[in-house]
Length: 163
Image 1 (cartoon, rainbow, N blue to C red):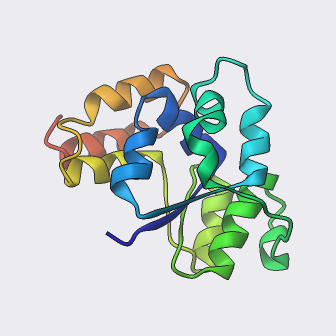
Image 2 (cartoon, one colour; image 1 turned 135 degrees about the horizontal axis):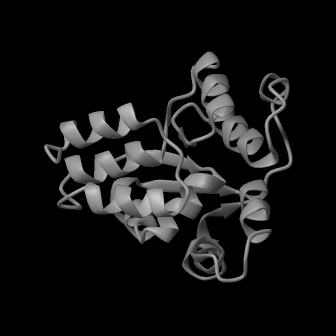
């Protein structure tokens, strides 16, 4: 496995809330980068946030200090975390952005940056048999305010033979 991922705040927060973040960093990819701007965004959240706790403990080894934002990424006027995630991937072509934000995904696609979101990560975990079902994780996502079109959820459940 040679997947290299750069995690944005939303997927990190959601994957921590549904108890999949450790699986992501240990089983689904070989290298993880969490830019410092993403960490800032997560640290601004509530003290009991599972991602915040995870970053202070296990997750701190994947934090990477970043200061440079690519001008082509900055032109999209995204948040700090999204800017850093996409700038890293733009500079390091063998990395994939794990990002849910719609505008950031459009930016990534326009720049040729591979991208997938939280749901894609869960589907990959199922495909590679790290989890038996996606439905319990999707239910937890929805409880945690994950916004996604019903059609996409239906398609994901059909793909996983869980409809």
